[in-house]
Image (cartoon, rainbow, N blue to C red):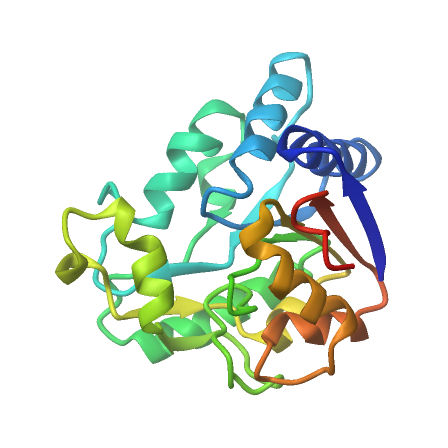
Length: 240
């Protein structure tokens, strides 16, 4: 595990985008893992700038970590919509190469199995970006999720729903479940970068880096990954 501490969020974002850019230039036909939420937004802004300067996404295949159950891809709060707004609609990734779990699947459990199979058929994820929740969750793998979990239906904790409530008109509209890559699915990625910024993430970051490896803090499992980097700002790293 490598820890990279930058001065601020802008530097976190640029460093992460530079890693993706360098990887894509070396390996144009690659499988990239993406995440949603506020943390990777700066990275996506840089990737769009790099695309405008010539970075080619035409041979890339993408997989997103998760999607809310009950939201269609055109719902403004869905993660499919988020990715279209903040990255996919502004770069030249072929539409058929974009993969986000189907939150409207009639059988969510079958969709989980199918999503896992799509990742396998694509050859696995080469480079995955993660955020980290204040409770240490990665994807929607909440505390207590077994480390051997593959893509699955996850019940969202109250704290996670509250953190995401700003994207909805009311707390009642926030979905209670999501389809999420499992911890084992994430750990299969060949390279992982985890991004964090702000003092509110400092305790989770410190526990993930220095604490015991335990399902009660899902991100702690990253200590076992052979190629992982934490890219964080000074505020998020203040307890290291």
